[in-house]
Length: 284
Image (cartoon, rainbow, N blue to C red; front, side, top):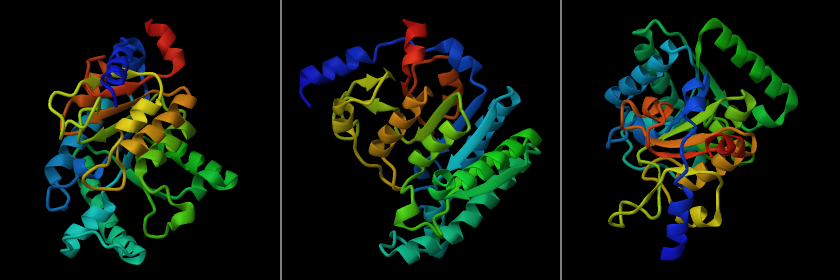
């Protein structure tokens, strides 16, 4: 990308953030990536999950409804099975997910139990959103859980999903869930501090893009992969398109920062946030 294009991106990302809207956001979908849940050996990190649970419960105490979309089942399974590399054959990936999902949920349940917070597991495929009856059943279940004060924990059903019904990543799953439950905000927790004009791992002093209003070809040109998991910046931009069309803002934040969601809600310049046109008018 040319220097001129980068400068235009930086200039266009210099919008103020909709502080009032963010402070009042009452229904939030939080998607957490594999790297925010596992250590370098791909095993589940108790410390990282504890940190995530602490922040989610702080949000809950403020009266906010939280839907957690979690990755990490396959990585967790690989860790406990002692596998050092990700299998290429689908049956073995699905088997690893089956092993890892139970460990992942057990860990979540134990940490949320410290706050007397009940959690529910929902394993979904695209069919749960594409089929009208299944989608309605899903929405009914989610609303019942929220009414009871239960925190839904959602993941793709990797053990049974095949290509035709796979999301392929949890970024798009989180986007569809956000639209379905009419969320006020989608938060993507990753291992990066949002989007930059170039890859901060290979380019010195890249410029951060803090507030964006659309997914442009220039942004798509920047998009790259992630170290672990199947989702990277490409899938996050796909998710941004989905939620922006529905009028829902989406933020990409560094989940290694224990207070990052609260910093976002206070309007602080953390990560990257995409804001829909209805909010652009409020901050101009």
